[in-house]
Structures are given as structure tokens and as C-alpha cells.
Image (cartoon, rainbow, N blue to C red; front, side, top):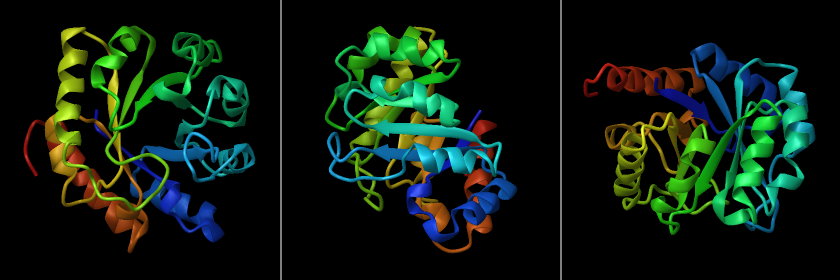
Amino acid sequence: MNILSPSILAADCARLGEEIKLVEEAGAQYLHIDVMDGMFVPSLSFGLCVISSLRKVTDMVFDVHLMVEEPIRYVADFAKSGADIITVHLEACSDVEETLDWIHSLGRKAGISLKPSTPISAIEKYLNKIDLLLVMTVEPGFGGQKYLPASTARIREARRLIEEKHANVDIEVDGGITRDNVNVVLEAGANVIVAGSAVFNGNRTDNVKAMLETLKTYEKGGQA
């Protein structure tokens, strides 16, 4: 199933609850929440208190992307705050397997994210430990970047690897995804689409519905 995960990094934080209701009512299934620690990436963003507060206003799936060093330190706290999927960076974990096992032990889905410079092959040995692979299509840490064209081949490689290993793993893409290029990542094999500016710039409802229409078309094996 193809899934839209609007990224609140691009939302209006002064009216975040209202923004979330708009995308939820328009049909978005997930909510992508970026957590940055100022160390793994230079920026700082949403923390535990924000996630806990948002959990009170929506039942959407919270797709939490931890861009933090040694995320195992905070996994239990994010699970408690309301995260449904917890994705950590391969590059940020000293013990990837232990971190993934800890996420699962808390009853949450586990994901691994890869920077654009990290080979897709690096996740092969963890395919039986993850529910989601997040292929970053920009350098992590900043919103509003343009899609890196080299990402398309990386998505194809990830899909091929997952199918060869008969793994039940979603492929998520994050960074520079718009209504103009979403078909490219869908054709390459992605099925969870993170969109920030493409959703929260302009009419939120129209943007979500347009993206979902494309996702549904590709879900049926057609072309938009």
C-alpha cells in the first residue's frame, strides 16, 4: 500500500494542531515527525513534549524520524510519548541491532534511515529486523531541499534487495518530494512518501488529495 506521510517540519508551528487536522481530514495516513539533536545534524527540531501534545489531538500514525546520536538512549521515551514507528539512522548507532530490538520490545515498528552517501547494501543484514527503510533523498537536517537525482537508483536498489531477500519492508523516501516528481520515486519502488513543502505550502487539503490520487494510481499498477 502507498502511504502519504506529511512532514510537520514544513507546517506552521503556530497552528500545528489545526495543520494536522487538515491533512488528516484530507486523507493522509501517517504524520512524519523529524527529531534533530544539533549533533548528528546541525539543526534542532521537535522533541518529546511536542509529540506528546500532538498525540492528544490525532490518532494518525506517528512516523518519528530520529536524527540523533545514539538514539537508543531515547527510544523508550519516544515510544511513551506516542510514536508508532521509530526510525533511527544506521550512521548514528553504535549497536544497530540492539537499538532495533529495543524498539520492537516496546511494541513499536522499527526503521533504519540512510544518508545519501551510505550504500544501500549496508542494511542487508538488518532486513529481518526492520519494518521500514528510509532512503534520504536529500542530506538530512534541513527542510526545503531539492531532490537528489542519484536517489532514484538507490530506491531501485533498495526495492530489488528487499524483494530478493523476501523481506516485508516498506521503503520510505524523504526530501524534495513534490507533485511533479512523486511518480519518479513510486516507479522506483518507494511506497511511503514524506512530503513537507509540497503539502504545507498552499492549500493543504488540495495538496494532500492530489498527492494521494497519484499514490492510488501507482498502487493499482498504473501511471499518473
